[in-house]
Image (cartoon, rainbow, N blue to C red; front, side):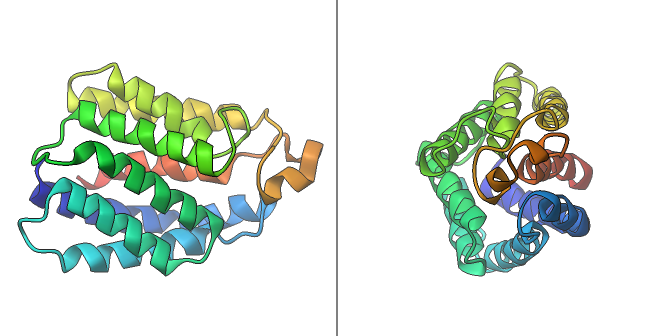
Length: 203
């Protein structure tokens, strides 16, 4: 996928993802402050506007960095800062690349997860977005065909989201609930799963 294709694919994906803003809000309200739907909607709008103004010859790394900057600028939330940092971390692996393969995408996703783990002081099992990112990235990395890799990533993320229901939240506002967080689905992990689903549905 080149820069032109990526630019349009991201915009298509975010337009679809916004349809689930109310669901993200409700999931987040059960575990946190309920602002995830707004965070994603504002971020999606900001990214879409930013990408629409990029030159046609923008590289994949230019696009990823524009996404990071616009998402962070659109929201003052912790989630926005973590996502922006994750996008920048992933973009470092794309320097000099004009075409992005599924291997590049998986590596980007793993680097993004590592950034979130470091900055958020979290790990897989803490009931966060990481619980979906890491298995999805690993599943995609194991496949060479882009369509097969995407399906594998979606399936891995879906399983991870279901598995978060049995976990106790250990980071962020959700950790205040302690044992009461068990049985609830993590909203961040759900948003990442839906992001992959939207990519498939919209492109």
